[in-house]
Image 1 (spheres, chains in turn cyan, green):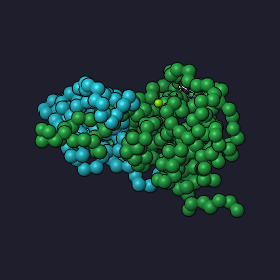
Image 2 (tube, protein in one colour; image 1 turned 90 degrees about the horizontal axis):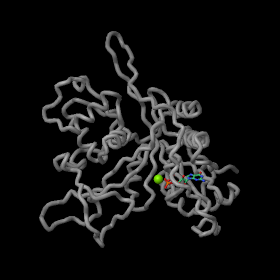
Image 3 (cartoon, rainbow over the protein chains, first blue to last red; image 1 turned 45 degrees about the vertical axis):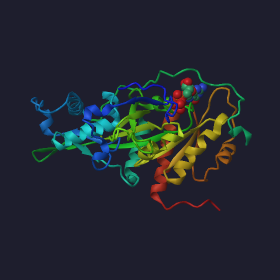
Image 4 (cartoon, rainbow over the protein chains, first blue to last red; image 1 turned 120 degrees about the vertical axis):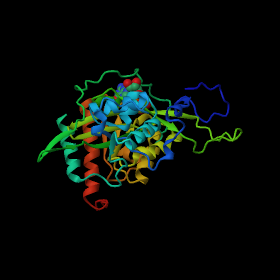
Length: 131
Length: 231
Ligand SMILES: Nc1nc2c(ncn2[C@@H]2O[C@H](COP(=O)(O)OP(=O)(O)O)[C@@H](O)[C@H]2O)c(=O)[nH]1
Ligand SMILES: [Mg+2]
């Protein structure tokens, strides 16, 4: 993170967070370097290889954190961002690396264009009522 | 409808952050293991999302917290370079960004069905974030406060234009006057098909009902062609 002074031309304000340089973690890569953006609620699911203990190699501690959490239970991109306290954009890049390494896969990476099936909607209603 | 504009009448109903939500013990969305002839194939949960929109202080965070099984989480989305001055002094595109927080919650409906709620950032300059949030959303809640109805206009407009099923939930604050639903509908210029309900964003049962209304509305839209106003 980097503190910035008061810039009179700043286009952001209090609701925006601090200005950060989180890309150090991704070695400068941004998510736009990839193809499409992973949906916030896409689930990151471990591959069998993720359960191996000898996972060091080129993985950063953040990569390992992601793998560890997903092995416990598949996690959405949003949950990973929140849990690891990293911006969503960084998580997307790191998850992309892990997909490339075949340590995880992402279930339904892009949001569907249509509303879910009526049966699923009915299940959602029943589920909500039963809460 | 003077009451829709941000008048200074009525007192501020802000009573400090509502910390408590009697959310049940978290259940992780696990992967159900289905044995298939020696192989174990994993079925992963279907994830869905509903957005909670509305002006600042209308109760979005409160609503998410009232039903989420996890403490409302904040996730930061980076504001990337779009529309920003690029630092060309050094001939290097700077990756400096700022972030905006959005809160979200999770409701595990079944082991294989997980609903996420996302509170949309309240300010107009974060519309581009809404676009991403709205993609694939099952529906949306537009929270409204009758003391500041105009704060909800933008959200109503947004979902109307994108044909995202939404429900207006009037969050009743202490000290706010109650208006008949029809008056609020008129002030918001809602289409006849759009549900409008009264709610208390702090109350779990009330929020559940709001969410059920959103999904039922989505179902109605999914089931048939667009309805015509009854004759
Ligand atoms: N009296 C009352 N207060 C509420 C209600 N919903 C939210 N609040 C309070 O209003 C304030 C703003 O709510 P918050 O959820 O932070 O609004 P947000 O900006 O839309 O996320 C908080 O102090 C809440 O405790 C409600 O239904 N009734
Ligand atoms: Mg809030």
